[in-house]
Amino acid sequence: MAEVAEHRSGFACFVGRPNAGKSTLTNELVGTKVAITSDKPQTTRHAIRGIVQRDDAQLILVDTPGLHRPRTLLGERLNDLVHATWAEVDVVGFCVPADEKIGPGDRFIAAELAKIAGRTPVIGVVTKTDLVGPEQVARQLLELQDLMEFADLVPVSAVDGYQVRLLADLLVARLPEGPELYPDGELTDEPEQTLVAELIREAALEGVRDELPHSIAVTIEEMFPREGRDDLVDIYAHIHVERPSQKGIVLGSRGGRLKEVGARARRHIEALLGSKVYLDLHVKIAKDWQRDPKQLRKLGF
Image 1 (cartoon, rainbow, N blue to C red):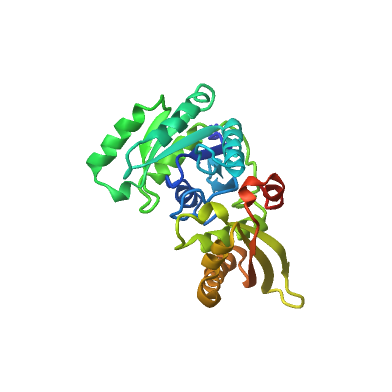
Image 2 (cartoon, rainbow, N blue to C red):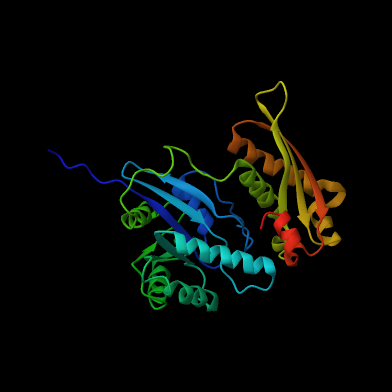
């Protein structure tokens, strides 16, 4: 009798400095946009899971915030979230971009990862290989190898798909044998409202100056199908900033910027929900919310 190939299922996460290409890689592996990507550091706040569905495996990717030395209560909560995630996954991918020197931030993460490497395999991933030549990729792999003991090393590019399939194979090989943990084809287990809030936040971050990313949070006040219409969802959302000057940046001249944010977010939300969307956005000031436990709780941290 022919032997039945075993099925594997489990959890993996990518870690690395902010902006190391973790979210883009998650999206490329899953094949649909689930984690937000932005050229601003620290834009991922939720452990959004994307599910890679294969005949031989179900790989559930948990997208963590970038680990960094915390300066605020929010920073500490984000770091706690990272450590909690590492403790629960079957394999970790440590991402380092090919086009940036390995620095103190990477060493800090490697030192933290070395503590779990005995029980959780860590794969070293050189990302963004499309931005540099082969010699630089080789140099970066050697540099990365010096940081800690890896279960495997692999260079990839989420942009042109280079070795993404190989990375998936390496991650899957380290999952335990087991049945599917999520029903076939379910791509994310985040509630839709969380994803919608993240897409609005991503749109609000596009093209703003560096001081803003940490200061923006989005809450969905209401989200429901419009009465009598099965093709339209009404969404009322608040964009929270810490200071009046930041409110001005988000609104833009005569509210022009907020209109652009709404249009950009609406396109992505409609693609996510497969439905037309009416999006009502308001900008609110929540003074110094990153340092205030009560406000952090209210905003979902």
